[in-house]
Each structure stands twice: as structure tokens, then as C-alpha cells.
Image 1 (tube, helix red, strand yellow):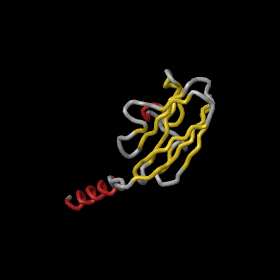
Image 2 (spheres, rainbow, N blue to C red):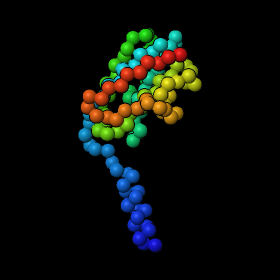
Image 3 (spheres, rainbow, N blue to C red):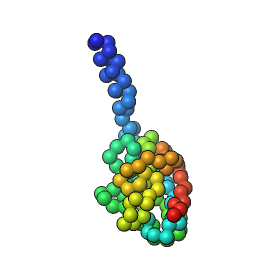
Length: 121
């Protein structure tokens, strides 16, 4: 029984590996083709952090490419969430408040990493 508990404790410790205490810079480039304004926020998948955070979101009101530079902890996964202003049921990526899963909407925080997305209606 003690041996089994030891293995469980070791397994939990291995899964709970903390993020490094170093920070790096990444860039998301987002272009909206939506006919409505779009709100964008970025979410850490490893800790309680969001950009811009504090219940705020970036607003895209045109069809231009927008650069979002994030300063994040090394190796954490960052996902974007975007949604139509006043209608969070129309979304891209993980949506508002990181509410949904996604395919290909995240990147690992490593200096120089860049991802490009175009949001279509």
C-alpha cells in the first residue's frame, strides 16, 4: 500500500511541473474579415493569466492585420480567443473566457514564435 501511494505521489509531482521563472516574447498576427467588430483576448493554458487581462479585450474594427506582442512565461501554451462584439456565440479559437477547445489556435511561449490568423465570417 505504501509503495502504491509513493507511485501516486510521484506521478502527481511529475504532472505538476511548474513553469520556468523566465519570460519570453511571442507575436500573434490577427486579421478579421468579419463585418462586425471583433474582440480578442489571449489565455494561458497553464496558469490564470490573460492578455490584456482584467476583463478587457482588444478590439478589431477593420480589415487590417493587427500585431499582438505578448510577454509570457517560457514554455506555457497561449491560445487566442476572439468573438463578435455583443455576441460571444460567434467565436474563433477558444472564444470568450477560454470557453471552448480549438484546433491550431495556440502556441508555445518561446522567443520569436509567431502565428498568423485570419478570422472569417
